[in-house]
Every structure is written in structure tokens, then in C-alpha cells.
Length: 272
Image (cartoon, rainbow, N blue to C red; front, side, top):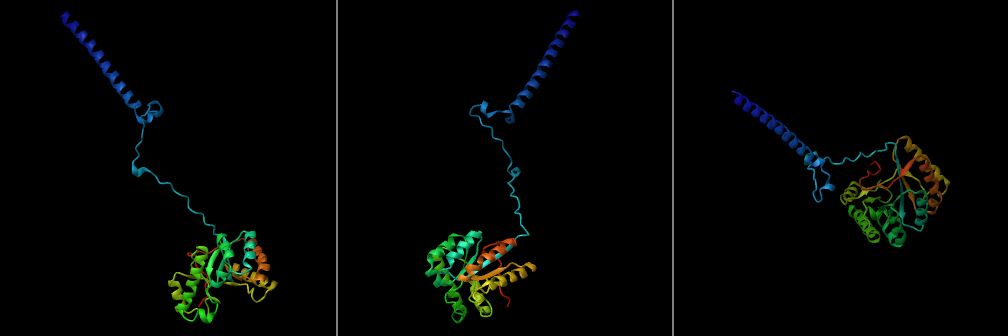
């Protein structure tokens, strides 16, 4: 009996050691699993071993660009010059550069050939380039829809030859009313041209003195009251060179931003 009890004591003792060993092995395995995980591995300590964390594709977030802030209080104006390039263009460009503003020039094809160098300066300065046709003769330009198209295409080809620039901006001689008929308009628009008129006429060809400024500023004030974007018609003349700074000072003092239209800009056109 004593022998049997002694065997049982030895067996129980052995079982306790086996149980303790199993518990130790269990915790040892857990320890190894935890500290061998990639998030606990320092690549600098393991030589060439490189840890790459796999991220499911659907969880990778694309960077989100902040939305563009649109200044609803921005006041835009378009300053436009017709009938150039002329000998007065260099002076006009100097004034525009002094005030750090841009303008758009609707030019005649023969004048481009006569003033190629200043035309290149105009393009290099980032001003808007537009077409005004070839003849500036309403009988020739409006003789047929095809004649209007041919004059603009000829002017387009010349502008591209001299500056490398193609434009969709056009202004027909004397504006689109009353000579531009629906058939003329249709054929020009089929060519991709955007027809621009104006809503502020400086009449610099008529006044030739301070009255030109006074009349222009009155028109600008009236449009401002109606919250309409002004498109100002000027010409490359000596009188315009003289009075242009006064017009620019008014526009800047009234917080206008002088911009250049592009092919997406909705043009100002006469009502028909």
C-alpha cells in the first residue's frame, strides 16, 4: 500500500512539472509571435530584410485637392483695341505694362505685315490677340457670308505665320450690327470664331480730347450700376495714347480686374 502511494506521489509531481512546462511553452510561443510581427521589426537591425506592409487597394485614399475659391466680388473688365497694329502700339504696350494690365487687340491683316516686330512683342507680353478682317470695308467684308469667312481666315493665317498663335476671337468691321446678317454669323461660327462687340464706346475717333475720357467714364459708371461687365472699345490713335492712363486709373481705382477673354468666355454682342 505504501509503495502504491509513493508511486502516485511521484506521478502527481511529474504531472505538475509537465503542466508547468506546457504553460511556459504556451507563453513562450505567444511572446515569439508578438515580437516577430513586422510592426515590431526594425529594418535597420535585420540587414537586407525589408518589411513591406500590404495595404488593401480599396483602402488607399487619393489626395483631395481643396476646392477653388471663387471671388464673387471680382469685377472684370475687357479693354479692347481695334484697327492695329500701328505706330502707336509700342506706346500703348508701354502704358499697359506700367499699369500691369492686359488688353485684347483686334487686328487687320495688312497692318500685321506692316508691324511684325511690335506684333511679336504684343504676343510675347501675353495680351489677347483677335482678328478684325482684311479690308475694313463693309462693302467688301459683308459682300457675302463667304467673303466674311475668307477675310477672317486670311487674317488668321497671317497672325499664325508671324506669331505662331491661332485665335478664335474676332470683331467684324463696325461691329455685328447692322451689317452682319444671320448667314454671315452662321458661317463664322461654323469656322469656330467667337464674335465680340462692345458695350462701352470711347469714341476716341470722334472726340480726340478730354471729352473722350468723360464720356467713357460715364458709360462705365452706368454699367457698374447694372452690374454688367464692361467691354471697352478703343483704337490705336495718338489721342488714345494720351488719355489711356486716365481710363486705367479709373478702372483700377474701382477695383476692376482687366482680363483677356478666351474661347470659353461668353462674348458681349449687340442685340439684333
